[in-house]
Amino acid sequence: MSTIESNLKNQPIVLISVLSQPVTTPPPSVLISTASSLTPNTSSPAIFHDDKPIEKYYKKNKQILFEFDQIVKDIRFQLNEQLKCLEQRIETQLSILSEVQEYFRRRSDVEFDYAKNLDNLHKQIGQRHRAQKARRETWIFQSIYKLWDTIVQDTRTHVKYHTIMSDICGKYMYDKFNEIAEDTRRMFMKCKSVGLASHEDIYKVLNELKSTMKTYHQYQSESKQAEQKLSNILQQIAKIKSAKKQKTMEKRVEKRQMKYTETKVKAFKARNDYLMTIESVNAALQKYCSDDVPDLIDCMNFGFHTSIAKCVQMYLSAQENIKRGRQITIETLNRAIADLDTIVDKQKYLEYYSSIFTIPKRIKFEPHKGDEVSTVNAQVLIRDEMQSRFIQMQNRLASLKTENDEIFKTIEATEQSLMENITTKNSDVSDLFKDLNLPQNNSKNARKEIEDYYVEKFKQYTLSSNLISRLQARHDIMQKALGATPPAGAAEDNNLISRPIKPKQIGRAPILGRPRLFGGKLLDYIQVTQQYIPLIISSCVSAINRIGLHNQGIFRVPGAQVDINQFKDAFEKGEDPLVNITGREMNSVAGVLKLYFRELKEPLFARDMFDSFISCI
Image (tube, rainbow, N blue to C red; front, side, top):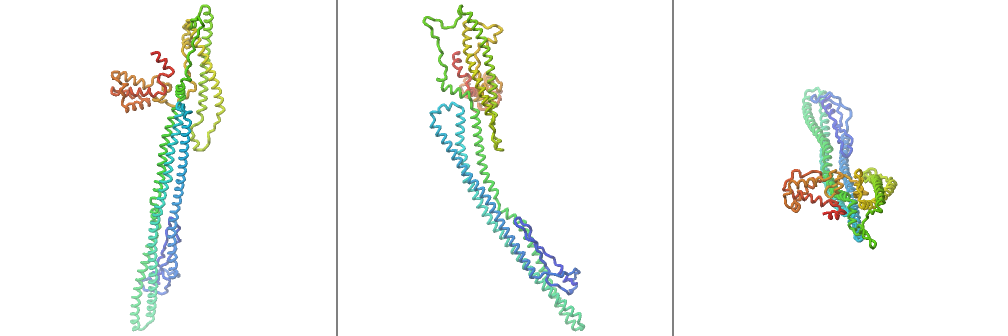
């Protein structure tokens, strides 16, 4: 077997494959044979000797060219489909972006309508309040009025918030989404031109591959023909016996040998060029599919997600500002709720209608003509009978007071039950945001029963207290007339009888948390903290007594507002900031003490006892 035949027969089979793409399915692998379509059947010179067997079948040149053209066609189709898929991907992204944009446009309309409705609500309430101003002149004496006014004014604030949100969603974000869509389309077109340029480069190397393949097969055919001619002339020389003819044939053999060598060299070079071009094409396809296509997608989407994130963050920023505004609203409403006070409302109302609710003038004794005695006295004739009545009244009064105290204890227990019934109606609606189950109100009948019992006991307590007041007045005047003194063993009971009845508060609301020191109630603060003298009073008085007595005008000269605020915050926290106080800060100490007394909800000397206090001076 000749080496020419073996070398030609054992040329490699080149695989031109398209690697899997991110967006399309690669075409099936295609095999291209580099061997000639001719099948040699003669021997060749020893320099091309090869012992490998020769295959019996080779593809023809036309078939090879047809298959290569089909490969190029498949590659071209795949590259075009890739661009179509990328374009479809961009359109999908823009469609989603358009839906997001449409949502915020409609959200803008909803926010605007909501703001408009809130504004109308605020205006209607304001107009109705002004129209009924004469009938509502006493509203300012109710702490619930402040709560109502806070809610109404908060409505105006929410009008502003939702109007701004409408502008952000309908104008700023809508325009920003249009800008993102425009930038994305423009970037896609530019990247598409880059992809088309890469395709042209691939088509160029494919055309180069086709040219080198044709050259390779042409030179292989010429080499086969030269080899065949050389083999024929060598066979002829073997048959010639004449030396003269052999010399002539040797020149022809030498010429054929040179031709064969020349064509073989060209065939080798063409084959090398063909193989290198195949590797170049495969490398180009692999590079494009594995690197260029992902890079192309990244370039197309450059800044797309960041722009959307920044745009939506604009919405989040608006929500954060609304959240801070609503937190301020919550704090304002909490303060308004904390200021709801039945006692203060009652005092303001009674003061406003003092002429109506004032105690009527005392009824004076109108003597009969000639009767000059205007006091109860125990004459000898009636003293024993009066003494007996006094003892009976004293016993009855003690019994009534005991009974009255028991009734009041029952009222307190009933108030606690009724308050528990009120507070069990959960004001925390967090569960509604989880399962949307409305809280059940099954305690309505139970509350009515408690209310009926409570009012009945209150009626008994009121009537009993009135009776005790009347009997106490009779008791006191009879005791004065008789000149009776309580026995030593009953001093405590008699003292209790002789003392004014300690007022008991009906319907006292429970104290929730730690009462405020400044602007709060002194009795509530004492009850919760168990400080019979609040720390601020004892500390300020002690500091003034130790250091400030020699300072002139400490209550007249104002102190530093910064120091007063610091002292106020410290006392509110339960701390004593006057431990290491100096004489320079005495005016501030006096200032914070004055501020505390001024901000008390109830004056230090109750209004109903003010006249009595003044009369004692």
